[in-house]
Length: 322
Image (cartoon, rainbow, N blue to C red; front, side, top):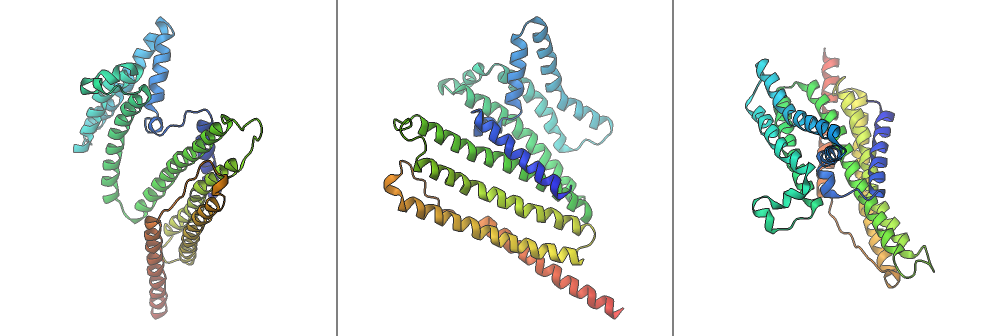
């Protein structure tokens, strides 16, 4: 995938998360239940629309629930079934129960011991949808691990690019949407205050925007770093010791170092600003994080860059010797 296409895809995910937050639909529980919570709502709407709609809803419900079993039967016919494919049978059975509960979410809190918990409908729906996603994710990850251990170098690079792009898109959608949802909710609280008519934009609004920027900056820096990672992996497909590979690896090290420094500096600047304006703020949120995983990733990339540089030098010496 070309760099400009990647950036467009990342922007699309940010816009999608922002729009979902503006409609008030962005909730971490409901997002974890995507798309089954939405499928349940659609089937419920069809079921309540009339006799024909109810018939269509029942057919779709059966087809969706049977689809994992159909996949298992297809693999069994091709004699490609492995042990982990038993999860498809489990998924089919779970779909019959959980999709029915998603269509009728009011029944979820009355299952067994849950009857005493009086669960909110939104949480109950999120729990049911998350359960289905958990089974699917477990199956896909086990399948992926099996495929990775049976792959050669170039296949591993292709898998890594696909996983990286998919993972970054999910990361962008979830965290950008969550950050914008927090900003949107903060503005709603400010609008409900008694000073809204007198002073519609206060220093609290300003710091809410600054906090949003501080939370979004790691996402933007992640995109900035990811673009180079994809280009580096693409260059690895042509050779690990090419001049382009060495340049991109060195560039990646510099970008990782810059990204970590920017995030840490922004946190310090934000905390200091809140401390200085503390008497005028109705809400403060001091942030202190240690980017251990980012530093570990930087060290890993730095180590890889050193290995590639040394390997390239050895290759050049061998070519001269020959």
